[in-house]
Length: 234
Image 1 (tube, rainbow, N blue to C red):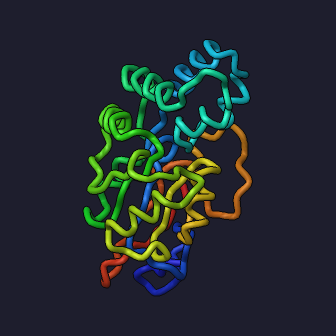
Image 2 (image 1 turned 60 degrees about the horizontal axis):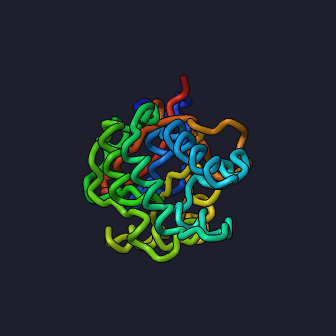
């Protein structure tokens, strides 16, 4: 708990990791710093209907994962997952209607030191660029996209690459995620996790701290240049 100027406890603030400082923050993109659910579900629904795939079941599995891996797992006869991913990506790039930042995300990212954060997404780079621009978010100093790693989430490869590129130990990073695949990847990597629930339609059971948005979330910089996180109560 933070102390007030008088030396007592400041009970207007909640510290999610009160005994920890972090060297870097790593952010998933879709559902974590921006909301693209409407676009993703429009495009994936149209694709599922064309290929006779159960829409509801498919939509429950696509978030946070590489599209090519999602398609490959379906095992559809006569389907080239790479080609289908290419077509899906083009459709998503062409559709930015409804993309918006998670509340407070822009302010939160702007407050971070430029060498201490990254966007780490399963989306292809071209799609990530379009969505970040559509949401009007600060441009990340480092963008790790789906094609940058062989194994997508829930494998930890993307987060490990981001930490390595920032020259920070993954164990000293805090990862912001929203989807089970990304949370698993962060856990496997060995990082701390903060869950963003802004786009959740049902309660996600998680042992990690969670917050609805960045509206009341603060990033504090210590005298040593490390990052801490706290939330102001309404």
